[in-house]
View 1 (cartoon, rainbow, N blue to C red):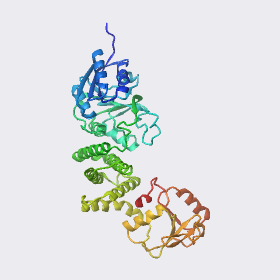
View 2 (tube, rainbow, N blue to C red):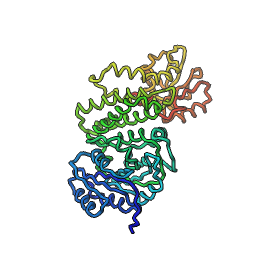
View 3 (cartoon, rainbow, N blue to C red):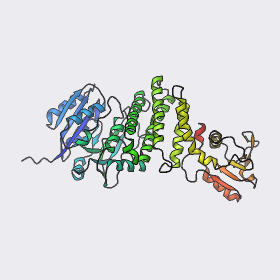
Length: 469
C-alpha cells in the first residue's frame, strides 16, 4: 500500500543558469513530508548545465516535468508553468532559492479552500560579499501570527500602511483559478511587482501565517543585486508603466484604497527616480531615448498620484513633504520634450502643500522681526522655498547660531549668537532637522520670552534642505 502523503500543489520553477544551486532547490521540494502533486521545471534557455540537471530529475521522478524554451525571462517561464499546472493550488520557486523542510506540513495545516491566497514569511540568505549592503535586507516578514483578511484589497491596504508590503510571488500559494486569470509581464525583470499587485487586488480571502518557509538567496551579480545595470532601470520603468495603466483603468474599484494606492505609486516612482539617479552618478551611459521614456513615466506617475492625493482624508504632512522632494528632484531632470504647461499644473498643486505652513510665518509683514536659528542648507532651503512659494520676505530677519565665528555673515547680514538675540523678537524659527532638539533646549535654557517656531515638532522628515540640493 502506498502511504505517500500528497498535497495538491503545482510548483513552478523557472530555471536559468543556476547549476550551482539548482539541485538544492529541487531537493528541497522533493524532500518534503507531504509530496506536491506536480513540479514544473521550465529551462529558460540555460547555457550552463541547468537544462541537463532538469532532464535528470524528470527522468528519475514521476512528478517532475521538464520543458525547454528559448530564453524569454522568468515571466514567460512562469506563464508557461501556470498553463501547465494541474493542481488546485499553484506556488512559485526561484531556482537559486529553496524551501524550508516544514513547507508542505505547514501548507497542509494552513490551506483553506475558502481562501484565494495563503501567505507565509521568508528568510534571506546572502553571499558574504554583499551581506552588509544597505539595500540587502529581509523584507519577507509580514505576519507574526495567523491572520485572515476578508479580501486581498484589505491585505494590501494593511501592508502598505504598515510599511511591510513586498511584491513577491514566492512567499505564497495561490488558487489556480486566480493565477490563471492574469499573466506575468514577459521579457522584463521585476515581473513580480506587477503580477503580485494585480493578484492581490483581485483576490478573495487571504490567509497569512507566521512561519518562515521560503529561503531567498541574494548573490553577487544576480537580478536582485546588480543595481546600476541599464536593463534593471529600463525594466522597472516598464513594469511601473503597466502598474499605472492598471490603476488608471480601475479607478472606481480602487477609490476606497486611495491612501495605499498613493503610497504604492510614490514608492514605485521613487524607485524609478533612484535607479536613474544612481546610474548616472555611477557613470552608466543611459541613452537619450531611455531617459526620455523614464522622465515621461515619472511625469505620468506624479499626475497619477495627484489623482489619489487627498490631504483632507489620509495623506499625511510627511507624505506631502516626500512628494514635494521627488518633484523637485524630477524638475532637475526636466527637458523641453515634456510639456511645460503640464508640469506647471503639477507644480502649482504641489506648492499648496508648503504654502499653508509658510504663509503662517507671516514673513510678508514688515512690522515683524524673526530670527532663524541656523545658517546651513536647511535655512537656505527654507528661504528659497518661501520666496518660490509665497513671495518676497518683507519682515526683518536675523540669523543666529550657537557660537558664530568672528565676523560671520549670512546673506550679507551679521550672524548672532543665540544668547545675544534681542528680547523684542516676534519669534525664533528653527530651520535645522538634525539639531532641532538641542536648539530648542538652548533657547529654553536662556529663558527668552519669544515664540519658538519648530516645523519638525510633528514631522520626522527634513523639510527644507533638499530644496536646494
